[in-house]
Length: 268
Image (cartoon, rainbow, N blue to C red):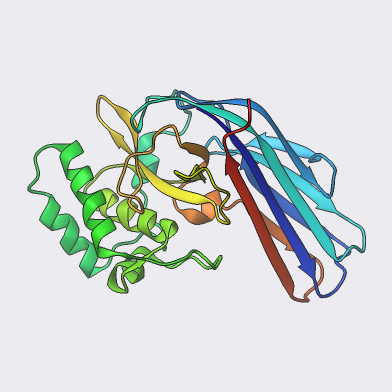
C-alpha cells in the first residue's frame, strides 16, 4: 500500500528567539515492513544542517534557527510503500541488541497493579498468545482519551486512571511485557484511518522481541497488530526517546504549537 504523509508543526513564540536548536525524528526509514519512496524535511523552508542515525537506529535531523523570527515551521512529508507482514518485522539486522529494551524507565516502570497483571499472565505457556491476551486486556481496561498534550504520563498512572491515549496504551503494554522478561520498545509513526481521512495526531504502538520471530508489533489502542496501514517513524525505550521534536531556545517566553497531519492514499 502506498501512503502519503504530510506532517506540519508550527511553533509561535511570545518573544523572538535569537537562538533555537531542534532535534527532529520525523524521517522514516526503509525496512522489511516499509519502503520510503521519497521524503523531505524542511525547517522554515530550508533542509536540515546535519543528519545522523541515533543509537536506536532512528534518523535524526538537526536544525538551527538564529534569526529573530517569532515562528518556526517544520514540514515533514513524503510517500511510503508498506508491506503485508501481519505485525511481524523479524530480525532486521539492527545494531541495537534486543536485551537493551528490557530496561525500565520512569514512564514504563510498573507499580503494584501492573506487576499483579504480569503475574496473572505468566501462566500462559505460549508467548504469542500471552502477548495477544495482554493487548486485549489493555485495550478493554483503558478508556479512549484524545491525545491533546505533550506531557507523557507513566504506565502505572495510566492503568489506575484508565487512560487510553495511544501513547499510554503503548507504555502499559511495554511495562508489563518487560516485567515478563520480554524485550519491548515504544514505536512512533502514522496510521491511515479506514476512511482515509486526515487526522490531527500521530500514532504510537509497541514492538516486542519474540524468539524465532524477531520484532512483532502490538497496538493496544486499536487491539490489533500493525498492518500495511501503519508507517513506522522512530523507536525508543519510551515516548521520550521517539519524540518528533526536541527543542532548545534562548528566549524564556511562552510558545504555541499547532500540528497538522494528513495521512492519505495518493491519487494514482
